[in-house]
Length: 256
Image (cartoon, rainbow, N blue to C red):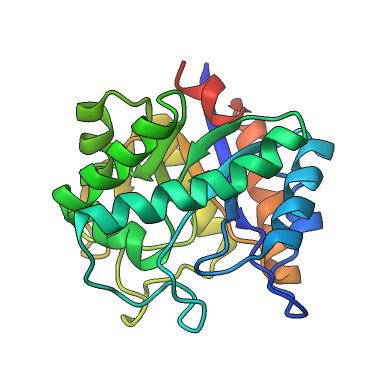
């Protein structure tokens, strides 16, 4: 039996600025990565997103990033290991307050944007993130890019880890994501994206941008739903996975 989680980055609205279509996305996913106020989000939207997730039977995950709202957390920053750990603990604590008050636990954590991409390649940075999570709650699952330093660091620290793949992103031959600045980095063909995902789940393979196939483990698929067309994509990918005999389950059910 094939089994996979569907996750999405949510709760990224801030004040009067609305980002994403969380209400619709939550109808089709199993795990939500909720912004914790550094790169996006605010207390009101964090609380609202946690409650919406509970209503839709979707598991809660923390989505911490760099303190960079103007850059949406997508700009690299040079920070120490101690700073990384403090940033992670601070954001985990913020989301946990809303989760606990709604009768939930944080299932997983997934770093955001530049922090995610940097930690995928920088083992020391990944280790700092993993250590911070373990020191707060060793039962939280670390969700990271498949075949990356995040997965290795999580295992070393003693956390449960889940390998994430992307439905609409191209891969380099080393398993990293192709930079958004390069043509072909984002896959817009829905049928192609779905075929790639099915191959990742069933065969543990994906075609890199250079045409070579690389090994990949797919515990969770990241899907984006910040526009009406993307919502249709999220819906279609879920339906096609089920049609292929792949069970859609939350992360803690996939990796147990």
